[in-house]
Length: 116
Image 1 (tube, rainbow, N blue to C red):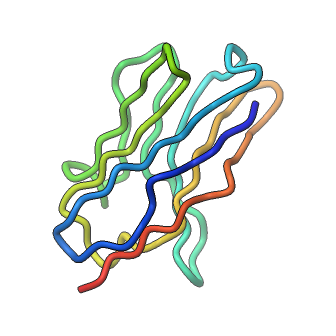
Image 2 (cartoon, rainbow, N blue to C red):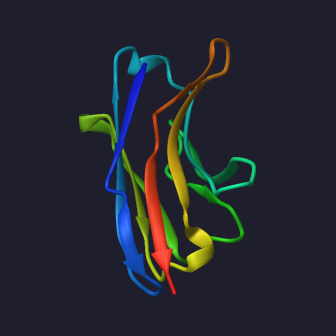
């Protein structure tokens, strides 16, 4: 499985961005998809995740109500709509695909910068 993120950029607080993740390769082997982020000097943290058999994403408390994870199964794509962005949302955002037997696959990340 290969993952490529896009859609990052710089916005002011209160603005919106939409991230995209394109999956290719053995996508049928994916059990779970997720978005993570890593801010400078901090550990990588989970933002949102979804089982491929589910229509109900799970969100970190810090983004719940502001971020929306969605999928286009036919196009093997996952999105993260980010609204009401805050400076604390500044980070590199990573797409993650998990196979429970084979492990994780990561994209290279896309930078999101939110200015006050």
